[in-house]
Image (cartoon, rainbow, N blue to C red; front, top):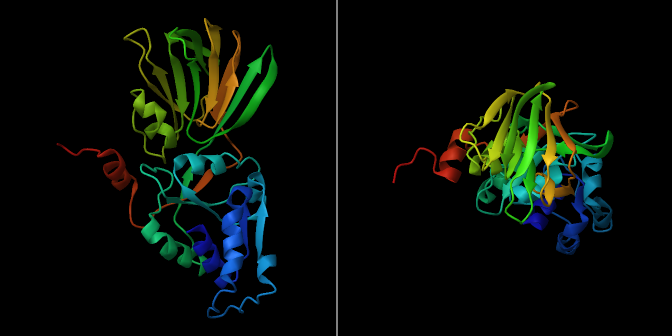
Length: 294
């Protein structure tokens, strides 16, 4: 399917860039030969075809393209979305898996959506907030990076709860003993946060969600905060292995006394190419069977 969509883009006069992981698809495009001429577009000559198909390291896609097409599930989508540090490029996710909240476009509508974009019609863009997550150890920055769904502080394999102090805008909120804690965007509210008992939050809302994972107190519940908030989690009791996990893609070991700071990424938002046939509530009904009675 990647080769087919790339061949179509070439027929519209666009160059195509593949990530290195998709080198086989790039080779297939060249083997398919020059695409058919389309109205108003010069036919691609066989000798020029290899020069219009490129393969680069995945992080370079953001700098070299005006539209990124992702074929897969939400994990594949996140691996691209988290590269949007310096520049935001519209990302069109085609769902090749099962759930797919970020990969909104169905396989059956992929060509139709792409053809309209290639013809110059602006896609439906859903602006999604990103988070900036910083891990500090003894006032030294160990890690800093953007997050689409969530940042999670959680214990390792041994079943020992960890202790954390939570502060918002420099004000102490509470101390918590739990398996961990999740800080998520509205986009990530339907991911790990939902499984841990957090609320579903419409993606367009300017909010952050703070969800404890199996807290050892009935009074510690999820919090919905303004996205202008700065959240700090200090790990003050580490009886075993503790990790900071970002979008389920990267993990960093934490030590006692480490501080995780989470705030909205201010430079830009993620530009998600939305489905033209379904709204957010349709996705909830389809993916989560939301509101459907047995």
